[in-house]
Image 1 (cartoon, one colour):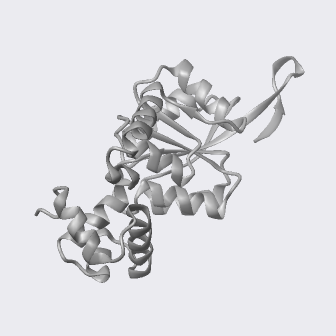
Image 2: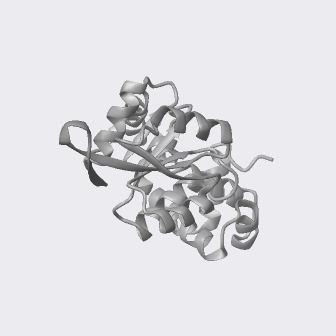
Amino acid sequence: MHSHSAAGDTMTATIKLLLVDDHGIVREGLRALLDDGEEFVIVGEAGNGDEACDAVRRLHPDIVLMDLKMPGMAASDAIRVIRATSPSVKVIALTSYAEDGQVREIMAAGAAGYILKDVTKSDFVTALRTVAGGQTWLHPLAQRSLVEQLRNRQADPLALLTQRERSVLDLIARGMSNRQIGDELHLTEGTVKGYVSTILAKLKLEDRTQAALFAVQRGLGRR
């Protein structure tokens, strides 16, 4: 953020935003809503996670507003890359729903906020200011989803897994190798290996065979 002199010589911080959504009309709407040239300035746009990571490196925004359903790189992976390469940049997830598991996955990846697209402009602005100030902002439905997740964790071991880990486990249950899983999910073999290790550790299982059995018993692995 940088400051500039506004009318009456008061100093206001300008928050630089990067818009990430695969629908141009959504980005247009956000630009119309937020780009006032004073408190908020849109410094760039991206249509997917890969473009977002590149744009962050080039444009140095304060906040990235990121849609969660885009082609290519998973939003959670894009958030991890952005947080690792540009730690000062905050990411806010902008989505239409607060799906169980997804809120926790996105926040665990390093997001600082979770906004549903039904929020009022007033709440939207509050969320941006809150995150720009170093705090976290969660839509009430996202808060509720997180609380439910915590309640369910003991009852259902699968609730410990992120959406991506569950996808990997599903493909393990179908008998796929790490390479095949990587091809299916557009991940490197090394990344898949990391996911498998995490899954085994979270579920306290010894090997892939146990993981496959665990998954099949819970209805995963069906084509």
